[in-house]
Image (cartoon, rainbow, N blue to C red; front, side):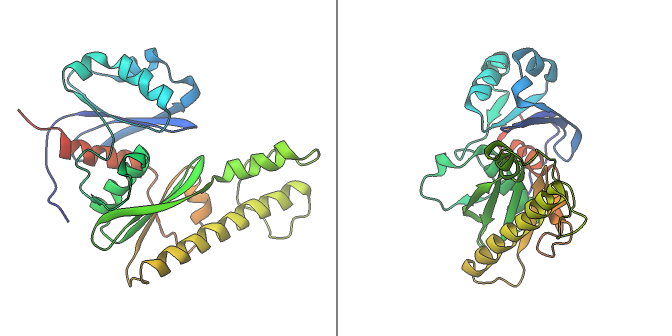
Length: 257
């Protein structure tokens, strides 16, 4: 594992995803309080309110329009060299063994950096967002690829949108696998079915990695707590793994004068 670099800079970490934007201040060693707002409501004014003098900015975005908005809002920091945007060109603390590194999402790179630093290798990050992504770090410590599947809410909302009688619902733990109402039947299908999807993908990943004796599997994202419940495959849950990755990348890429 590469040595950890210690700095005293204060950071503003911003992770713009499709549904929500999470942000936090951080030291080189720890996150501060994490806040979030709907990405649709992210404006230049909101971004400027996040910034503080002397605080370097680390930006991860999978929404190009909002990334451009943020870069315009933080133009003074950019001119002063006080902002970095996550890409495969940065020092991530992990290698990349992938055909087109520039196509890897910024959040996935941040997750790879975090799991490599905090847990070691080999590892898999399961990120429950609008999509559920699986990102794999090899035993050699390299990002080697992953899996992208529909997110839990995407799958649930599709039933509501494409049927005349099925209701919209918020995924929670089902009372039983045998639904005794339309809603409870949909809950069972969504949550138990989703656990089956995650379990099978992890089984295939483990097999293709050569069934390592110790594989660190870390869940993060909005539904990590719900889906990991009762799953032996998902014992590690880190709600703010992506922001931790931004902090780690900041330490590796901002330099003291």
